[in-house]
Length: 62
Image (cartoon, rainbow, N blue to C red; front, side):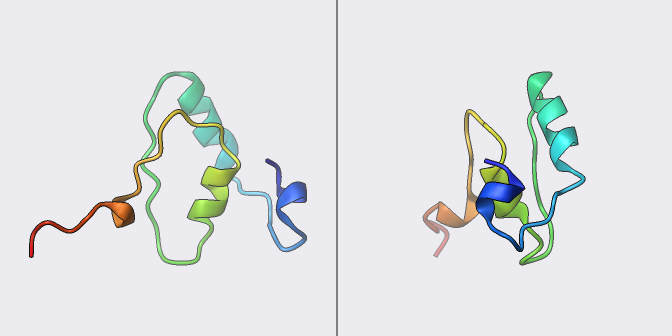
């Protein structure tokens, strides 16, 4: 997926080539940051083997 296919308001991300380079080297990526800064959009543009979403893990420490 590219910025063009995601819609007119999606800007190219400077971090995307760095993430792709590290993944090609077999490295793991931890993508963290403030809300609504494009983290999900960046991940949708990267072909990954595994995504571990901490928000989807059931909360067992109640």
